[in-house]
Image (cartoon, rainbow, N blue to C red; front, side, top):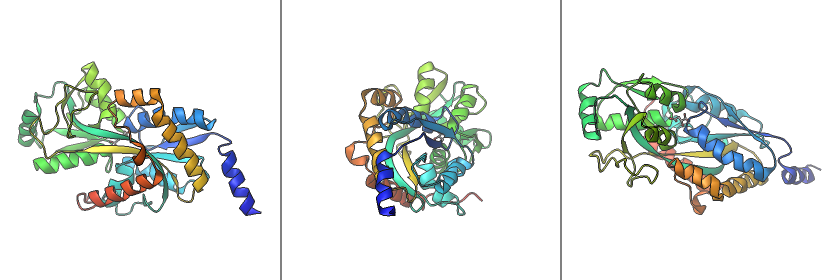
Length: 309
Ligand code: MLT
């Protein structure tokens, strides 16, 4: 009997609303990407997708919850380079493994990293920033979204290049961290472009450089780190959708098809591109490609990141 039940369930999926866990605060980059894509996916799937922001421990609290959720396709997570790669070396007692405890669904967006500062932070360009941070490493602070978050890992990389250890100021996401930066309560941050574009365009923060090989079309006036004198700092994060391990292949295929359709939609693309995201090409959108990305990213970050002591 079971052999007949499973395909019928998969065919009718989804019959009720789906919960999408976002492991950081509302309004931050992961939340924004998840909301843009899932709004379109909900139309395709004919059911609402409810975003649940579950914060804490650099996204690992939410990711643990998602790993333990029923694998019936009704609880998913939008994770990222931090929750599904950097967390492995940073948290020796991590309660999940990104590869063993999840079914990859689809890569949603690449998100270049920028070095940003409060508007009245003294350095006026990246060269001055480097000199200033080196000279004042004990006084300056860097906002981030918790140990293992993209903003934390990216600034750790920057700090290792500069050979400095400024104080980190953790938030539940770079949404609230950005509010603190705009309010001048923290000095600087390494954040994903999606969170930065609206503030840079509004003139509420400074952007020193984008850590990618090319400038981003959404921020044509922001130099690359190479142009601005720090070519060693290269960083781009990614956001992707996962289901708990054991979710049926038919459900994963249905979710992947809906995500792919969203990434092909003109309005979704316009919105993601306006915010500077890199939209994955067809070959990068499969569950297999996401599995390979997670494996490669764990291998990349494991020798670089050490657990917090
Ligand atoms: C967020 O959505 O707040 C970010 O993805 C946090 C981060 O990882 O820096």
